[in-house]
Length: 400
Image 1: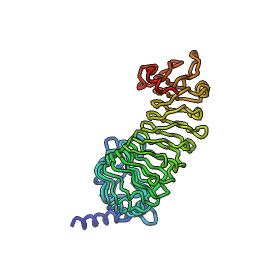
Image 2: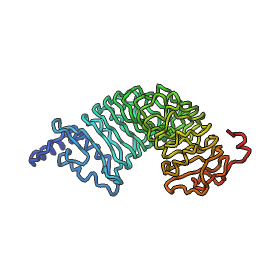
Image 3: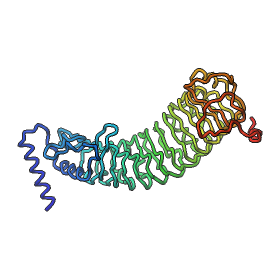
Image 4: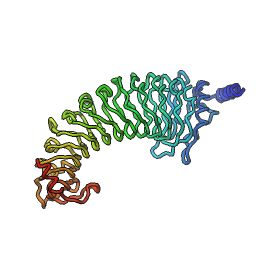
């Protein structure tokens, strides 16, 4: 009885629209009903007026965030919420009727307070290419059925409350290019991605465990962040294959072993390997042109290569480097070619710099707690401590 009433109401609306001589195309009836259901479970947060235009006595193709195809009279894009930065967003749940928008190619919700699970009916959207519901409160597991969306290119569910494992079937999506699941509560291992279309993979700040093998990640990756998980094992063979990377962040895991020298030849703008258990000496093959390199809080040893002198922001602190700091670093510092040079908490024995030299205010240099008294007094980060030099007994053991 209720279904019949809804259809009768819809027909009445359509008759009214046609009789008002509107020039806009009239939306497909099934899409009209789906939008009505979606609207009933969502509200504007205080200060938001996104739904003001959603008056179902007019054509929904004129609603904010609704985009229709003129020929099929179907919704092809649904962008819910005011996209302006700082807008309050929406609250409520995503209604399962989202799966009835059969021509939908793009679905997004701005940051807000959307809660509940991601409806499994989304898997019915066979034309969907872009799905982004980030910075909300979506909970539960990622539906395995998302892998049934054959044309999906971008999946962004970041900054939510998702738990469970990452469905292995996501790795089989043939056209997936961007997968962003950071800042959730996901567990388990990183699935194997067989597609060579994936260029961006962001899984940072979860609870992922296990090993990363050479077959796990595709060579097509350009952006990779696995930071702040509990991943373990060596990654040298993995990194050798990923020579298209322009951003790499493996920080704050439990990775071990050496890193390949060739990684410093990749077209990287940012290399973050800090707070792991990496070991070995680091000998770049050529001058390093990566703007930011952070290798801090590991177990790297040996002498510092002069090839790092062209790095603008270099963090080598809290390792086991020994010997003298190459003079080229002094030249770069004084010429403001280096902005940050953190060498504290190593076993370095000398840096040839005039004690009366004035370090440019645009640069930051920290040398304390090495096997020398810092030749110049410079401000260090708070976590560097207050001790200027290491105890002599420690330095005797690590003398290079």
